[in-house]
Image 1: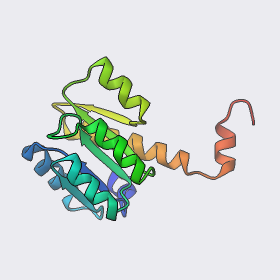
Image 2: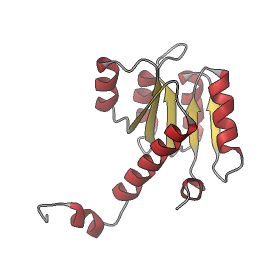
Image 3: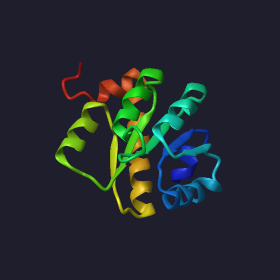
Image 4: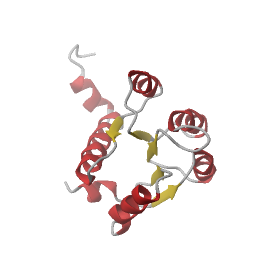
Length: 146
């Protein structure tokens, strides 16, 4: 199934302070039936998610004010039902460890190609389908048969 067909109706929030990346991703999502919101800071993003249920949040790690991981921690307190993708040029062990601890689903290392984003989105969507599948589907995935 086509990526954008799978994204139809899902709301994507981008938190990125670099205008070039924001604009590129805005164009990437522009012609699809996928609501897309782009903001510059974690503070702005928190205001968005107070009023909007987002399905996927893509955030940069380095942001003005709070960093991307702090934003995700605060966002989870408001709405825990979203998938998390972290963009970063600072892929350190500490960042990765903290990101896993708070439930980041995918990492995209900067600089990145749009194919990297597409692959991350596909993986996130596959995880969403499995996690929201019927109980029987989950049971069939359990090797113990529980």
